[in-house]
Image (tube, rainbow, N blue to C red; front, side, top):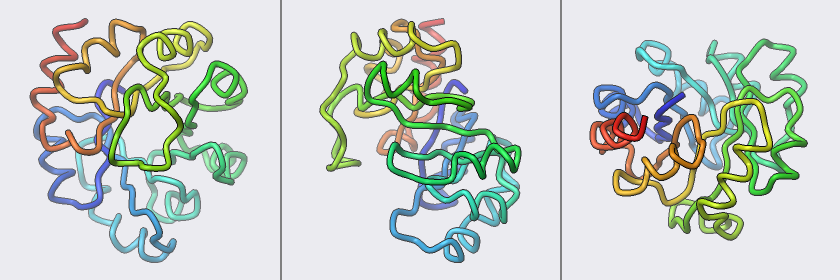
Length: 181
C-alpha cells in the first residue's frame, strides 16, 4: 500500500509501476461503466494491485482487485459482497471511523491540489495524524503529495501515499517513502 498511482492512461500506469508504485488506480471521471471496462482491460496485466475509481460494477467486470469510493459514491456493500478491496475517502476522523468494512482509508486532501478542484479544505499533517491514530486499517494520504512531502505523510502515520500529478515521478516518491521508514 505504499504508493498508489492514480492514473487516466496505461502509459502513465506503466511508468508508475516501473518507478515502484504498488497500486494503480484507474480514474476516468465522467466515464461510463462500459468505457471504464474498455479502458481498464490492459491494467489487469500490470504487476500491481489494480483499483478502479468510483465504479463498483466496472471493478467487478474487470476482475480488479479493488474499488475506491468517495464519500458520496454508492456501492460499498456490493464491493464487499464481491470480495473487492474497498478504499473509502475521509477528510475527518468522524468520516474515517464511520468507514465500516473499508480495507483502507484515503485521507485528505492533506494539502491543496489542482487535481481535484472540488476537494474539501486541506487537513494538513495534523489532520492526517489524527485520522491515522483513530483507525486500525491502513491510511493512504492523498492531496498535494509529491517527492518533497511524501515522507512527512509516512512519518505522520500513513501506510502510503496516493498521487495523481506526481505519478510519473514514482521512483523519487518511492525513495522518499523508503527513507521515511
